[in-house]
Length: 233
Image (cartoon, rainbow, N blue to C red; front, top):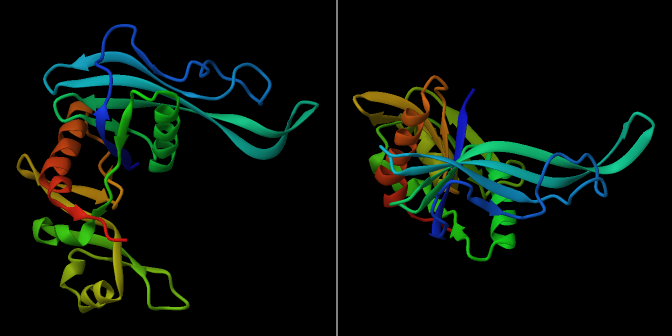
């Protein structure tokens, strides 16, 4: 399955160390419903440092309330606390936080973390994907917002080289790229990558080991994202 990394450029983040916990003190072990156990919150628990890459590794626990009706045995409920556990990587020199989870969960976790910890601050850049066209070797797929149609809000094109099709240029004139898939050259090979304007990087090959994933994400950041123009409103 594809692997998703959401990238956040941090202006303030604690240094890793044994026993370090960043986050809401209310976040704890599982609780099924509001009122049972602690309130939901978000915590990052320091695990270790990958010295070769200068990356601190954390284990995240993110909880949030879901409004949904259900029943556990004979007790009905109208909401429950959903839980997510996932790895988080902090590149110290680059002040880059990488959350290995879907971007919606990552966004919620960062909102919760920064709200409960004022010393922690950072943001996800909004970039203009079209500005990356000269740096992309080969597009494999692209999604567009369509602004000039009453019936269609978006469209997608797929193929071995979609940017060679006239429909690609026509779609550019009608809307804005909101997601791209492309081949990215790294260490002598091409890697199938996805990228969205909010700096969510998707790796479509799930056979990489941890260090390969991180080095590849960092290369996408430095060779593409850092050279993109800011997103357009």
